Length: 323
Image 1 (cartoon, rainbow, N blue to C red):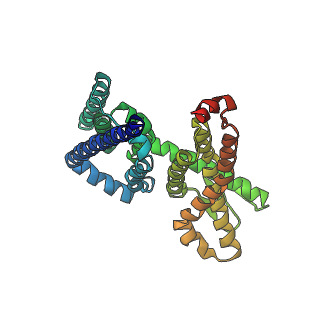
Image 2: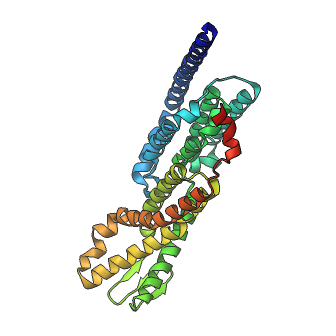
Image 3: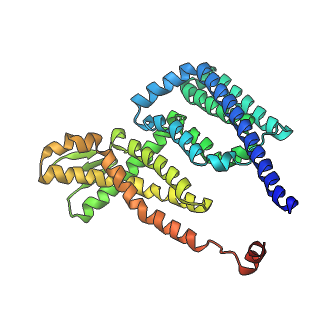
């Protein structure tokens, strides 16, 4: 009887000691990671200051403020999964991975100093900083924790400003799609319209879908929101990809609808709508409409995913219930 009563106590005590040991290791790793992150932020203080100025002056950079806090929040939500059974072992693979990422960050930082890359200096510097953070994470927590935290960590790359030539192509695509959608909607509504490039010639006024009217800010915000929603709401990787791909037509449809709405309001209610709030700052309204349009898609993907959840068979449950 004595052996039967003392054995569980020893097991519990042993498990408690393991939990305490895991917490101590995790706390130490948290300290070292925060220390390395603080040093990197100090070393990159000028690029960080330039990044803040960039996000305040460019429409397609306004989301940058949200990326780091969202990444930290996602790690916090998955903290039990990421740091469970935590035992850091500085084995060869971990050191090689961390060292490789560190040297990649150094190379990117050096490239930003060369004149041929001067136009993309800020992009390379921020990219170097993000790679440096990931390198520190691998060093402090190990490769297994990195695999579990890969989405929040890779999500940080959205804080890197895209090169100018890439942004120009994206804006051009949004302009073309928005003008085509607006033209199609106006024809459906029997509004006389003539399309010349990105200009819509209408009875009352000519509307040009300029770069500022491409909807790049609301489109970027929608992309960030859908990425987070897909990560939190879906399990299957390909279903997450499908949800993200689904925003592509919505991006151009919402902006085309915005152009048509502004024209109709100006034509039938008040011409001031052409220069009013809906034209200059109404992207948030159509951003919300884009999210609403994605709700059925997300619900369908989630419903289809739940149908494929495999229930354990009775013979698989037998050993558990018998114990």
